[in-house]
Image (cartoon, rainbow, N blue to C red):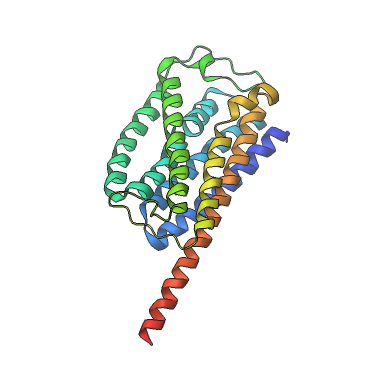
Length: 252
C-alpha cells in the first residue's frame, strides 16, 4: 500500500467514526444539525473511499466521478447546512435543506452523465476536473464548496465574536445555550480551521502533487473537524449535567 492510499484509508476511518458519533447524537437528540453533519460525513467517507480505491488500484472514470461528486461538490454544502440550522433555526434550515436536496439531485445526475474529454485514466497522478469535465461540473464544485466554506468559516467566526461579547450565537428562531465560552470558542476555531485545511488542497498540490495534497488535506481536515466536534460534545454534556443538577435541586 502506498503512502497516499494509507492516508486515504485513515481519512475514511476517521470520517466513518465521526459520522457514527454524530448519528448517535441525532438518534438521542433528534436535532437537525446532527443529521446534516452525519450525512455530510458519510459523503466525506465516500470521497475518501474513492480516493483510497484509486490510489490502490488506479484511477478510473467511475472512481473519479464518485470522488469528484462526494469529495468536491456535496460534502461541504451538507456540512454547512448544520451551521445554518444552528445559527438561523429550524425554519431557515428546513428551507435551505429543501434547496440543497434539489441541487444535490441535479449534481448527482450531472456528474453521472457528464461527457468526458478523455477515457484514458491510466496515469498515476490524479486527473483534474478541467481535464475531464466541461464547465457545468466544475462550476458546481467551485460554487458549492466555495460558498459552503464561507458559511462554515463565517458562521464560526461570528459565533465566537457573539459569545465573547456575552450574546447568544444565533439569530431569529434559533435558540442556543453556551455554558462555557472558552470551549465554544475552541470548538468553533477548530471547525473553521478544519474547513480551511480541506480547502487547501489546491495550495498544497504544487508542493505535494494532486494525490498527496488531497489525501493529506482530507485526513488532517477531518481530524481537526472531529476535534472541534468532540470539544463541542464535551460542552453539551456539561450543559446537560448542569441542567439535570438544577432540576434535582429544585425537586428537593
